[in-house]
Length: 204
Image 1 (spheres, rainbow, N blue to C red):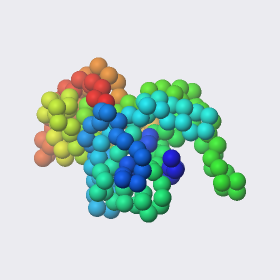
Image 2 (cartoon, rainbow, N blue to C red):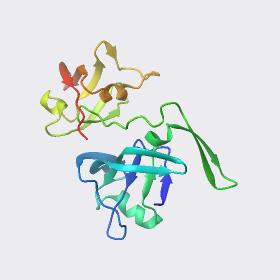
Image 3 (cartoon, rainbow, N blue to C red):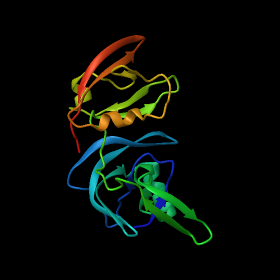
């Protein structure tokens, strides 16, 4: 595969199958927003590829985004002649050196680089909100968040006693990757604050 190295992409791997590329979706995927483009949110699916090998490194069960075939992302792929891109969730597992004169990238694995890849276990797609907290971009049907009454457009302002008004060194997205944990979320909706308990489970 030919992949673009995309330091600004939040996913681990994004692949754009189409009629010209001999790539198939995994047997199991879930619907999700997989990116944001000029036209807004990019809908697609999330699944796991059996293995991804980059140089001497092979990682299994890599979470992979598959943008919809009609998205601008897929169309731009055909224009560039590439099959997808490597994003930050893959790259941050390594120390990365870009050697421009020799047109190569050097990867040195960080401790735990081969740990499992996990997707948001509440069934939420979130983004940092300029006003502070996490804005809910979408809620997966039948997910723990949907069962708890979380809705698209809600703003999560606290997780337990941790207020999310300011950005710090701790990443709030990591809180949604702990299978079996119950999160007490403080949600702001139409000026009203609500508390919702969400018990996380692996969805993909």
